[in-house]
Image 1 (cartoon, rainbow, N blue to C red):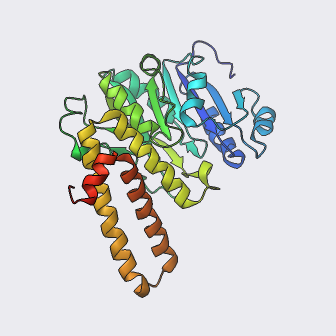
Image 2 (cartoon, rainbow, N blue to C red):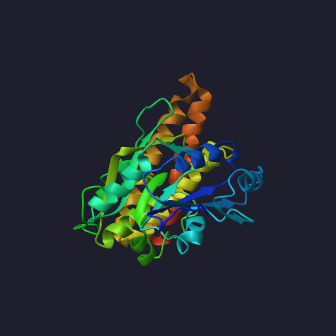
Image 3 (cartoon, rainbow, N blue to C red):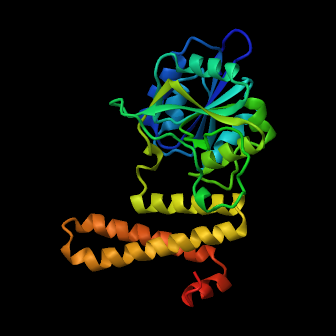
Length: 307
C-alpha cells in the first residue's frame, strides 16, 4: 500500500490479466500524479505471464491481490471495494496510462459536481486520436417504452477503462454485478448509478492513453464478439421489460438474416474472403443468441411469420 500522509482522496483499482508488459507503465503513470492523495490496488486474475512476481518485485508499495483463477472484471473489482478508503474509487485498465494531472483533475471535477455519481475520462489512442468513450443512449434503448424515462442527466454510460465513482454510491448499490464476467459491467453500473439518483459525467480534461483489448489479445476475434453479445443480452434481460426484449431480439434476427443472405449471395464476388467469412460468423452469432433468447412460443411465431 502506498504510504501517503492523511486519508487518501481517491482509491485506484487496476484489474490485470496477463498484462505484465503493460501494467508497469500504467502504475508508473498513477504514481507520478502528485495533485492528490491516493492508494493503489491491483487485482491479478490468475495471470500466467509472471505478472504477480513482477508486481511484487517492482511495485511493493502497491496493494496486490493475486487470484488463482480469472474471476472476471466485475468480481475482481468488488474484491477490494471494501478496502478502499478514498472518497472516490477510480477503475483503470492496465493497458491505459494517465497523462500528467489526470488524477487531480478527476478529484476536482467530482468535488465540484456533487450531482455526478460516476464519470468517465477522455480516452485517446497512443497517437492522440480520440476514442469513443461515452454514449447518450443504452444498447437497445430505442426499442424501450418508458423503462428508462426520467433518469438524471443526459449521458447514459461511459467506458469502464478509465472511470471514477463516488465510494459511498458504488458501495450502496453493491458494487459491480458479477453476472457480467467481462463486457457490459460498465454499461450496467452506469444505469444503476442513474437509477440511484445520480448523473453520469464526462471529464474531458482528464486524459488516459488507452491501447484497448489487451487482456483479450490471445482470444480469437469471434470469441470476443460472442462474449460481447452474451453481455448485451444479459443487460437486456436485467433492465428491460419482457416485451422490449422480445422486440430487440426480433429486430436482431431480422437484421442478421438480411446480412447472412447478402453475404452468402455476394460471397463468390468479394475479394476479401476472410473478412466476408468473419462478418458471416458475426451475423450467425447474433442470430443464434437472439433466437435462443426468445421463448419457444416466440420462436414458433418467428417461423410462422409472426415477427
